[in-house]
Image (cartoon, rainbow, N blue to C red; front, side):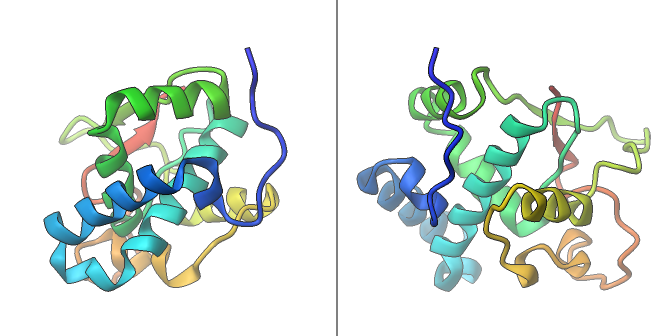
Length: 153
């Protein structure tokens, strides 16, 4: 089993250019309001997943906008499974929270961005801002992405 430990300067290099193009095209089609940031969203989703691989059990969570990239990648199951195996040595499961049951306090986008920085992964701050995790509420009190998604391992 080979697990990637060296981090490229751009996480987009962790997948083929063709796959990156497919994923960003899907984001542009499915989320036209974010079409101008599709590449950044996907790069941050790849950084997030790399952090999940490096910190198993940390219950890292994406911001709402980065979660778009994760959900998009999940649709490409073969490529996603291969990426997870290569980056983490395991499948990175997508685990939504149960409605009405609060998420652990450590499962939030701010904590995830901090972990990503600690690992030397690129972080685009405005894609991890608290206001993006609450459907634009701007309260900064949300602990999860809009879908309630974390890495369960």
